[in-house]
Image 1 (tube, rainbow, N blue to C red):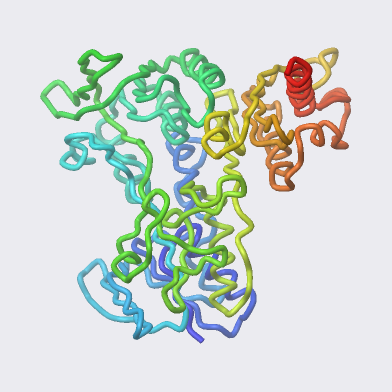
Image 2: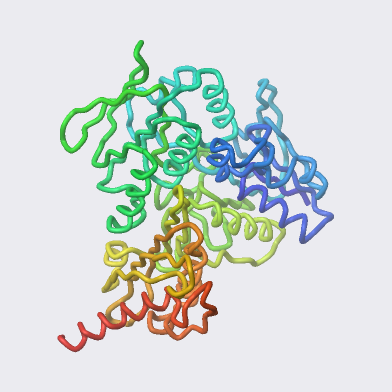
Length: 461
């Protein structure tokens, strides 16, 4: 049997590894568009901050490590067409040579592409002009070369999501003056504005200039540098810097599968079932190019590295004839912004409302450990639950680095996965010692605050 996986990132490599793990006799070939399989794209900002060096350290596994598992790698090779009925994949190398590859089962993990968000000039200007995106190792090298060659002193970052915030920290660590432009009313729009404001305060404290309510219309190169044309708070305004980095989201890379006959769904991503089948014979797909099965929302589009790893593993097992199922996501995410950690899982209030729940959201603050033990720091928490059933629907947390905010959001994620009520989270047997926690952990202080308000509303009703 010959399994072919397309894509050298999380989904494709996970599928190939799982297939080889389950059946060491199966032939597995991975087709990779560049020369850098299994590199951590999530780690790129920390290369630019200088915390991860050299760039080769970003490899989860080297090409030699992957080949040692028995898989074959076709590097610098683009999959151009899928002959579904003939079970054949057409390929083209970077030097233009064309060939084909027969398969018994195919796993497509082509991922996503950077969004241009309708910004004029972003499709014309590139690294040679000082305008960058950051989505691949090629993008990484181009930005690194530009930084080393020109030593720019100022940068405009378009977008204040996870990668944008991480890159703001990285550029600041290099001594650059950073201006961050965000379309929405607050940075990190995956959090409620009340918590996003805490993240913005951290950016302010480290010298990052943040402009929210800013719609970027275009980028123009001139003798004085790069000018970003915007509408800020309803008024035209220009910003100028030596370098521009656009991180305004991604769009699923679906062209290969869509031309082969696959159906598109939420977010224009490829529709797959929980076994990662595309509906095309013996063709599976996983990662940022496909829909996500969400345990609270059903089908949605939520591209996350953790999800891609899990989906790829399922696809690799089922390509062998297995019966694995992707258990679903609850959208757990976390980001470090200088000395602050922001995280979320599940649904926010407006998301829960749109999904048909009757949400109640409360905000509370709790110390990460007993206050009498030195170094206690507050964690801000927002809990969303359903007023009718008491079901936990989501949680958002912001705390200082070292408060174990990331692990505490994992407690909520586990509770969401298990379908626990808010009250049941208060009943969990969580660990306690004064240097690390309290008899009622910060997680439970927040759920108890929710229950008190829920009960008060019930009495008044």
